[in-house]
Length: 257
Image (cartoon, rainbow, N blue to C red; front, side, top):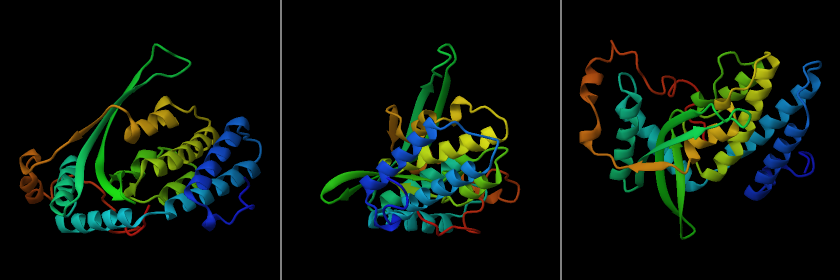
């Protein structure tokens, strides 16, 4: 399906998912050429259009959770808090407001297909919220460090622009992540190749997807006793250099995914 065949705004979730699959397949079958900028520019525009469409679709439940998290963070304040403590505080506040929220910890081992000896272990934390949609339980993922997971040390201008358009706080389903991650990994691959760099295993879709979608996922309940020295961090705010979401209230804070 070409982008011009169906108005982007009219696409349903299944059609959008198929468009992502078709685009990734075409990317995989076409070698990246560094001799001309035209194909790269066209691919970038296509990626941005599809990504914007995916990011623009959300349910009422997702919008509500996103607004709640923003409100919590404004109330808590981010300076001086360790990232892990902030996640725990947000989980507790969500639970106090009646949400079935947990801190979710994933772990995995990535083995490159061309090198079976090398293994790259990984681990990640995010917030898991169970909601009811159309009478059925549905899992919603909330991540306050989403954008930073896709940042590159030496990005091309086009890739940096794409990453800057990502929300600082992701709130969405597994299905949405399964559409977003391949698009961003494909764009990251183009950025690395343009700079003459190889794509490391930890930048490939399988590794990135494992951060949020690993089968080895442990839900952790949170209590006030689990939060370490929150007040100490607040009193040492001026001396602390560890912050979470430092620019969350300065630019793009209301952007939703």
